[in-house]
Length: 271
Ligand SMILES: C[S@@+](CC[C@H](N)C(=O)[O-])C[C@H]1O[C@@H](n2cnc3c(N)ncnc32)[C@H](O)[C@@H]1O
Image 1 (tube, rainbow, N blue to C red):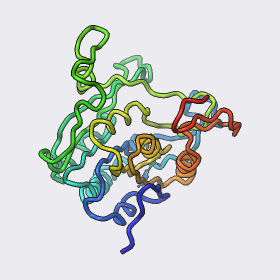
Image 2 (cartoon, rainbow, N blue to C red):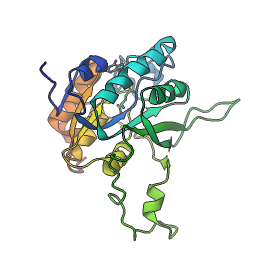
Image 3 (cartoon, rainbow, N blue to C red):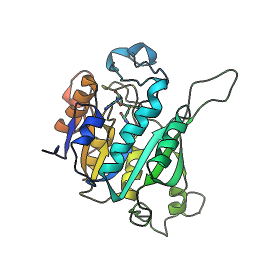
Image 4 (spheres, rainbow, N blue to C red):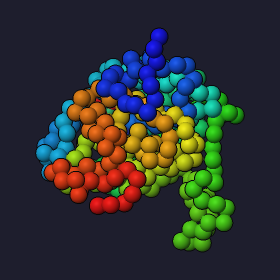
């Protein structure tokens, strides 16, 4: 069989795509699977300039979520190296299906991280959801990489005088969402700071990072910025094209009006 090449992304179903990768060929998987909450990614759902938000998000039915989760995570289990790490983002609604798949497929849970973001939707009769779960799992807890000084040395100090490294290694991550005013965007995306952090602690230059559910391509784009190899899949053509454009042109953000001057390059801070 001819395998898919790395440093490419593919407009295809991730389960089919992973079938075309060799066993134990991926070092790190970072992904934010579909939510199964009847999420409708229409331009009007967003309190933003509608024409800049792309439509077409491929949602999974709640009744099919457990089976779907098991199928794609089985693909990850096969392609992940024994030394690899796997990070799965999930809201609380379908967390149980992900936790069951982790156990049934024989992954080992390393951490249960909480990503706290700056705001959720205001509710009158309940608390406001302002966090996401991130399950950090692996195949072999003794072989996985963890580069615990990759961001802060032991002497780095936090504003309160405590250890900056300790603070960064806590399992509650306070990271704001990114708002891309005036640029092309998809309805959901992980902030680059979140992906930076995972990549720094659990991979090295040249490692292969995979995202089965690319959306805007954030994981592939940030992996490229950190000199990692990447691979990923996205079924929705419009999102795939957007991710591909970002990778090919080397732009982190692309101005909606196609004025070159508004683009933000992958390497550099112009804008
Ligand atoms: C929550 S979004 C991912 C957002 C992404 N992390 C980002 O930062 O932009 C999930 C994505 O998975 C895509 N998707 C759903 N089912 C898929 C499948 N079977 N294979 C590949 N992509 C799929 C959806 O269209 C959607 O873009």
